[in-house]
Length: 144
Ligand SMILES: [Zn+2]
Image 1 (cartoon, rainbow, N blue to C red):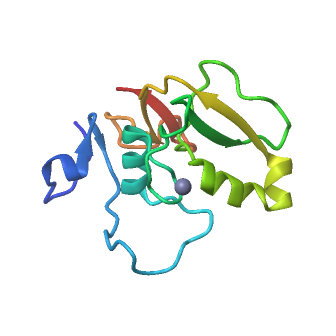
Image 2 (tube, helix red, strand yellow):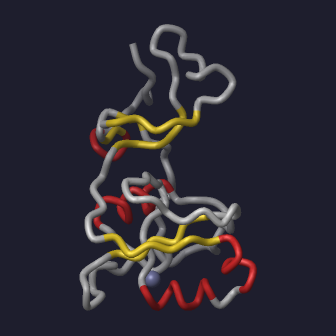
């Protein structure tokens, strides 16, 4: 048993065995929603190593590596093999973001040579009960 949309539509709704939230696709329309992630853009940015802000490829650096800026309010550096649901950033957008002093204090940066998709992060439901798994939380990452 699994959950799904009554009118589920192929790979637009389900990828890697996971059901994805439906989001409007209107490039260039609307205003940025601070602190919220557009599910489709996030998935595309992670799968194709695109900048999370401007959508350009992030492998155009001379060394071919990808720049990741992750939240690290505790000052902990990014470890080798660490997983993230945060897409990479191009150098131009990184300079703009890091120009904000509050961001400097809360970011850790890493240049990554190989960033392989590992799985899906999201809300997990128990198939038997369709309740959150783990109970009361649900947010998890699943190997796909
Ligand atoms: Zn960018």
